[in-house]
Image (cartoon, rainbow, N blue to C red; front, side, top):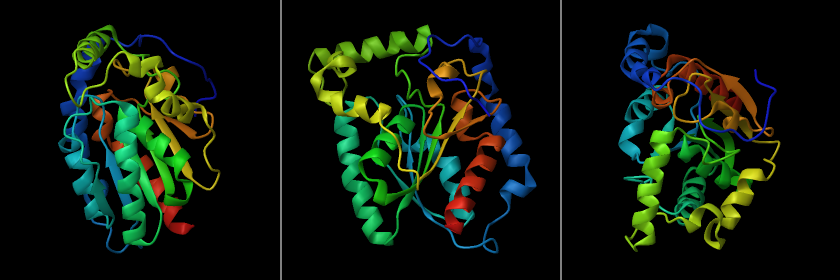
Length: 250
């Protein structure tokens, strides 16, 4: 459990730590308990998965299949590459969230990785009646630019494309301009206490500074994981299982 809060800077963990992804996936696949189906474990809940920066729904395919085997109804964000303006993406996801909540006749659990977790938080702030749980995986809610220098270079390249007018790409004005002002406010706003909210962070995350992932309105849980590996890490899946179980009991 982490009590520290505040904005972060560039992560201090060595970048080679991100090479752990394959090993983290193999540990998940070798875990018999986590591979088991959930048919006998109770009623499932509807879940919406949101991928991280530069990624699409395919990056969460392992998690999607696992959740479905555990008896949950899983929907995807519809994002092919998470490089668009935050406010525009969240606005589209708002429509999807409301439709899913109406379809299932109950609120959803939102699971977002990295940038996707910040989108999930914005949705929870705006539509608390449609959200029963929120799980943010390595999500820099405290400072969206508390990232490694390598990723920062990529961000600047993408933003430059947006400045040049390439459609579907965020621009430099998204960081502090009017277009994403509401989204930035969502990162500071309190979460409804009825929402089971969890922020998962790793001090060995070499992409996002773990301090930027601390959310004072959510339970903060530390795992020893690479940044990208949070989508396949056994410890993360146990956090998911516990969070979903708490939602089911409500």
